[in-house]
Image 1 (tube, rainbow, N blue to C red):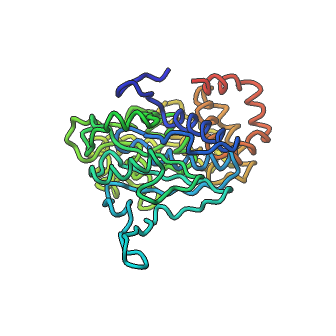
Image 2 (image 1 turned 30 degrees about the vertical axis):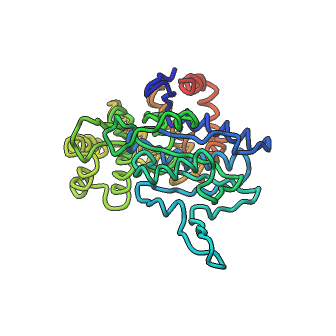
Image 3 (image 1 turned 135 degrees about the vertical axis):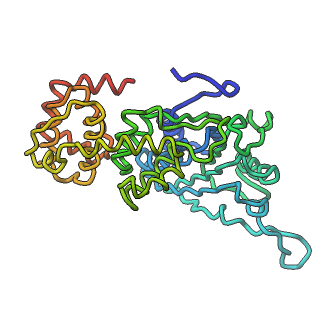
Length: 373
């Protein structure tokens, strides 16, 4: 059950918030109800927990549920001046009145086969004058004489005042007219996204064993580098695109998550040197099966990453499932659950593989139980 904080608003995981918003908007859109009948949404949460990413995932979900193209206009309000939202004043044709040139953020496709999402990020950190214009957009779907199209969803996001980031208190009268959600970082939501997004297997494995390291933000800590879902994504980008040798990129990783955690991460990933041959596992020739939990977590993460890069080779995937069945059932469950996160197309391929069908028929209840929690 989701607990309640921050003045009585619901505290939700990324997945829970996505489910709620996808259901609300897809039902309204598919029933032909005007989007302006729905309240604008305000997402609250600590820095780096995935508020921006959740809006992008919402766009993908709405495309699947409605069949419409989703266009997202991402506005980082902390970088804006009031004129960027209000527009530039100029004289009318006969020089008697001032008119305002329409800002680029209002240049949206109004057609019925498109859904626009206007995402007003960092709204609580913007200057009061910018906030005033942004709040008019969230409440009235316009600023000045500029109107949003009827096919537009408005979502705002910001840090909480208690996060000790730059944040201004939202007026009560305004707050009462918005739909509020507080988003929290949780491992299950992050892992589902991470597997489908190609996050480096070293990061995946470390998070599997130490999910409490996903978000180490502490508003009372003066550290500039700390772990959040956003900073772990950046660590993954360095490992994937610069070097996966921590001796080479240690200082870069330290600059993202802090020296203490980077040292811990560097020590942990040594287990990757003792893994069975991943290529041999997928070729069906590997017989070595590890028993230590840290090695198995690293192994399953490496196998998921490999499978995501060879999704069309069902023979190799079948070999990997046959090998995974030699592990303890709990670890096999971890692997196959992650396989399901690789993508919808891959999920359908899995269901046609005899080895996976066999596992489902004998141990599928474990997967059903895991999905309920």
